[in-house]
Amino acid sequence: MMATMKNVTIDENNEALVAFAQTIDFAELFNHTKAHTKVECEFHQPEITTTRGNVHIGFMSHDIAAQTGAFAAILERCYLGSFSNYVFKDKETGELGYWVTVNIRYEHKDGGSNGMDVVTGWYKESTGWIFKNAGQR
Image 1: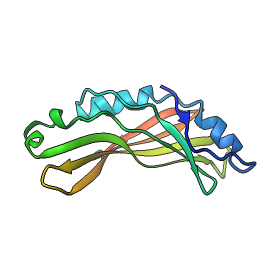
Image 2: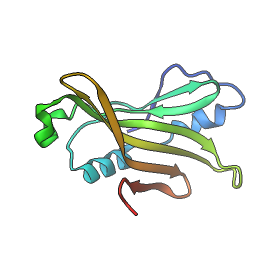
Image 3: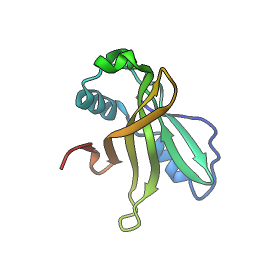
Image 4: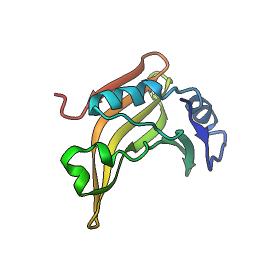
């Protein structure tokens, strides 16, 4: 699954980053996240955005609250999605890449919300996806 553009301002400083962002296939990241969390879900189309010249790619799953076992009784909504992320140019090699933390976010039926990281992913053309699961030493 590839990202689509939403609210993107392209200038000479981020043109290459936006073009690179459009080439990243998120299927491997989504499959890894589902396998690590043991959750079956679909993800919405990833979206490329720019903020003050920085390029980000955000995404979120459909609601997975019903798959949270005993927590389903107290969770109103629960999602897997990008929390922190950015598209970057490696200062040493000049290679373009993408870094993301995939977070599980939840909203309580009685109010309040929270989240925690479950997977960190790095993508470069030379390496493909590299993952580190939360709790992995």
